[in-house]
Image (cartoon, rainbow, N blue to C red; front, side, top):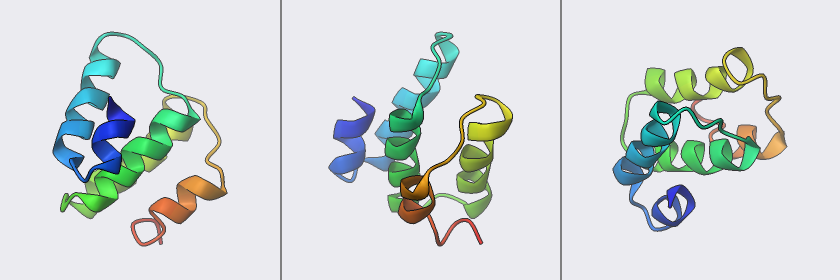
Length: 78
């Protein structure tokens, strides 16, 4: 659902599904983060929110961002 919404420009909806995933106690993986970063960057959200999502990959979920994560949201992470 996150991917489908992100790929169709529905950033708010993708973010909502991502938050629901977290609230349900499910863990995000690298693919989920790639999709949500794409959605967050296509959505006109605050840069701080985007940066928080990116930083949570390592700090909260112990995931190491890959080149794709930096590339999809490179303008957010300077």
